[in-house]
Structures are given as structure tokens and as C-alpha cells.
Image (cartoon, rainbow over all chains, first blue to last red):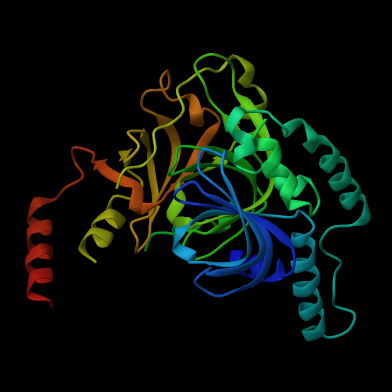
Length: 149
Length: 98
Length: 93
């Protein structure tokens, strides 16, 4: 699976982007291109040290300034759905073989999600990095505010 | 001709990534491209310090940009499970200076 | 292309790759690509006391852009062949 396909699939989802300069941006992905340039909406920017925040309705980020992106876990399953669908479309009937995550697997994911809480406040700066942002399930503001404490 | 130097053989395996800013992130490699951008699933960061053992932080699903990657190592799960991370102390790795 | 070709000749030999973060990794050269990304097998970090970060890694991929040096095996260079290849490269043929 290509990283840029995953990113494309993440359109409409919340995500956290850390830039090479240490700033983080929490927002919903509107669009992206093959250079990894991205367009976010409803953005909260957090400074490198994690103690200053800016809210902005939208922003564009040039791809080559990005260090990494954190996307919601479930997005990877959606990419697979799409690739499996196109694959089975092309394949003659009866040859298709089940692949990908079964329901047992997604159960595992839920379990893991619960385990995530431990990460809160794990490290002074950790909150500043906005890790908790996505854990908040869409409430992107909260991760940032907790960083202050 | 040498075998192509790609990450193909590591897909769906546990890998340990060292990033240019000195972090160590462990997770399952789900994909990569020409630029060494990678998808890491179920990832966590191993935080090294000299005062206490290695701390693990859960990160989740990550896309790491290739130009921020130094090393991608195949994690030998036998070796890793025999490793008591709580006793491992070290300075964090230095960032890469180009 | 010269260095790419040169490194391909070294496949199977033991090299030490020093990175731009001072980490040095020794291992058997498994493969190289056009970006001079390097794959090593049977790896060992040179100063494991100081760098226990790769204790459970035995095979790794090193991004060409972070390599500072590659220490070659003593028998890794055939000077005459390298001279010829260099001249050919310089002539652009």
C-alpha cells in the first residue's frame, strides 16, 4: 500500500501533522497531492515547545516540511476495502480470496484503542506534541489544552 | 546485479525506525514508496533516557516522510522479547545533521 | 552511476556504515540502489553500550541520504579497475 493512497483515503478525517520545525497541526484533511502538500480545515497549531496555540479555519502545508502524519487507525481499513474492491472487480468470479481484516481483527483494534489512554501525560512534552489530539476522537481542541497542564 | 534494495521484504513485519530527529518508532510496515515514505501501523515510540529504562508511548497509525528517516531495521521478535527494555538506559540518539 | 556500480561489487562483503547521527553499523552488504540506500545483514552497532537502540535488529535498510562514511573492507578496492571506471565516467562514455 502506498503512503499517499493512505493519505488520500484519510480525506475528511482528523489528523495530526508534525513539521520538521517541531510545530504540530491538528485538523481535518481536505485534500492532498502527490507531493504530500496538504490542505487542512479547522486547524489548531501547536508550537514546538507545546505551550502556544493558534486556531485557524484552514491552512495549507507544503509536503516537504512534514516530518510525519498521524491518521486515525480505521483509515487503513478503508484503503484495503477500496483496493480489495478494485482487485475483485478485475478478477474473474470465483477466483477471489478473502483478505484483509476480519471482524476478530477489528475487535483487537478496539482493545488497543482503550489501551491508548495510558499515553496521556506520559511525557511532559508528549502532550505538547498533540498526541492526545486524535485520542480525543475528533475533539481536536482538547489535546492542545491539556498540553498546558 | 544485486537484489533491489527496497523495503518490500519487510512489509507486514515489525520494524524499528530511527528518524532524523533521533526518535525510535516501532510498528508494522504496511507500505512504502520510492521516496522511502512509510506507513507504520500499531506503532509506538521507544523513548530512551539515562535516568530510567525505555518508556513506550503508543502512537497508532503513522505516515513517516522518507526524508525524515535514517534507518529501517527488521525487528527480530525473538531477540526483542528477550530484551528487558526496562533495564535499557541510554542517551537519546542525536539528530541527523546534513 | 560509478559509486552505485562500485557498491554493487561490494555486495557480500562486510562494511561499516557511519551515519550522520554518529551511529555506526557494521554488517554484510546485502544490496544497494540508485540512491545509495544500503541494506545490511547480520548487523551490529559498533558501540552497543552507548547505542542500545538497535539491539534486536539484525537486518536493516539505511537511507543513502544519512550516510556519512562507508568503511570498506581492505580488499574491497581494485585500484586499476576503479581508475579505469573513473576515467570512463569522466569522459562520459
